[in-house]
Image (cartoon, rainbow, N blue to C red; front, side, top):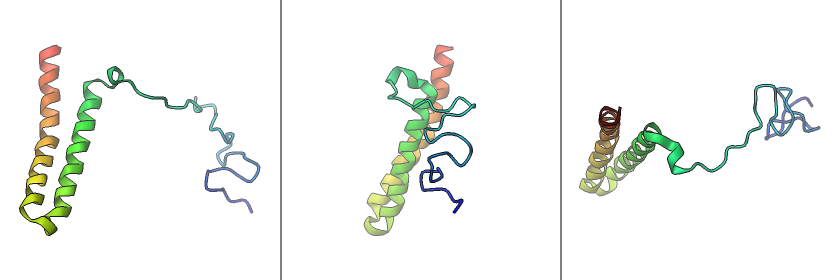
Amino acid sequence: MGGADADGTDADGTGVDGNGADGNGADGGGREPGPVAPEEIGPAGAMIAVAFTGSVIAFAGFGLLVLLGDVGLVLVAIGLLVVLASPAAYLRYRQLYR
């Protein structure tokens, strides 16, 4: 019918964008991401991971605020503290080791 399947390919397995089903194209695609070692992340990646974790804690606190009151408020405060401390720690790291 000319439409794409759920995996982005036509019925014959050819990608809708002209690439094969495995994603190999002229743009250098087809490289599968592998496991990432901790030493490959670096300070900026760690900052993003910590800030994301803090935002998850804050959102969980917002959700629990209605049900548990003060416990949710404490989680919101802790989450926001983590989110805001993460860039500050990264800037301090850059200042010390630059």
